[in-house]
Image 1 (cartoon, rainbow, N blue to C red):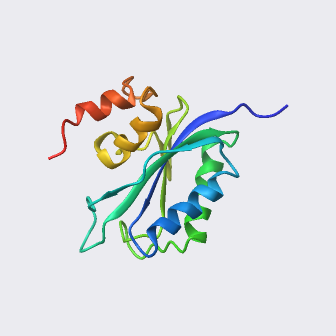
Image 2 (cartoon, one colour):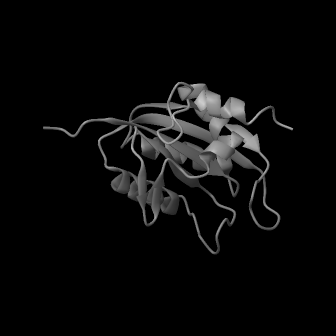
Length: 158
């Protein structure tokens, strides 16, 4: 019997090298583990909360369904990042590809190296706006609020 499919949301970002190509690579690879993959519009954003001078990010969100447990999905995401040339010389360094597991169904996971829902997604317009585009009615299992309501709570961008 096959494992049940769980809806997931994954944020994509790139601010180093051929950004569009890195995101296209990620989406291509994610199709192997996500069914019914849908991608938001890709937006360009200024870097937030990163050290030093860094280039603008391209950000988006993909949603789909997977049979993988959260730990295995995280491992796949990290392998895709590595295959795209992601280096981690220091925390929050510029990156060829950043893949964050934002939501995993209604699960709340708190383990070493894995926290779902992503702990900072509620504060990040560059995650919430694309996520609201493709899954605005999804509910954050921690707050009980929809993605659209979380985005609205951020107010208008300044």
